[in-house]
Image 1: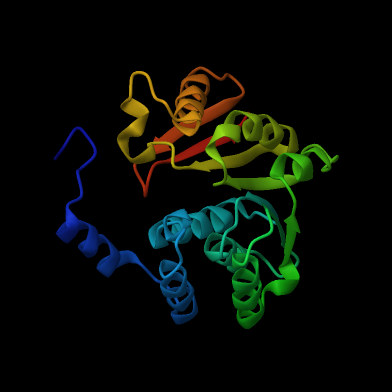
Image 2: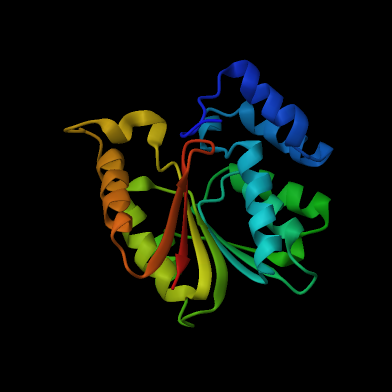
Length: 217
């Protein structure tokens, strides 16, 4: 027994993947292709994608929102977990990787469920005018705007809906006392605010680079 979360060395992490990861060949191919890109670090870990899909199924979610899509791995995981009438709006900025995402969504037969909107995410979010329209929002974009994304997410989520933030442990940089990085300061600010935010139920999981789940009360 242990009273705290285990540290995962390489061998134990590989064991975790070996006994639990159900990555399809298509997802594995997308992940491998993405790893060849200069921005490969932007991709979610495969166990995070699988966890997001499980959340979608557990909630019976039908309407999803993603802020930060990159090559589309997490979007593909979540879209595959939706019912046939489900939908996912993805917010990202124009980049060569958009075509990669669309290509894999098309190959998976899920492109019709995914609406990729290419513009600054705050602009796209401000244009969504139906409060409570989403069941789950996944946020994995520019960290400096995380506090702003929180407010939009809570406006757009139904009561009982879930907002999930990636990178909330930030490879340990959240421990820095006087960070130079605006991204680090924003994640630190988000984590402090969420701790006492009475609008949500909260859990920060040491999954990937830190995954924070906030259920809207």
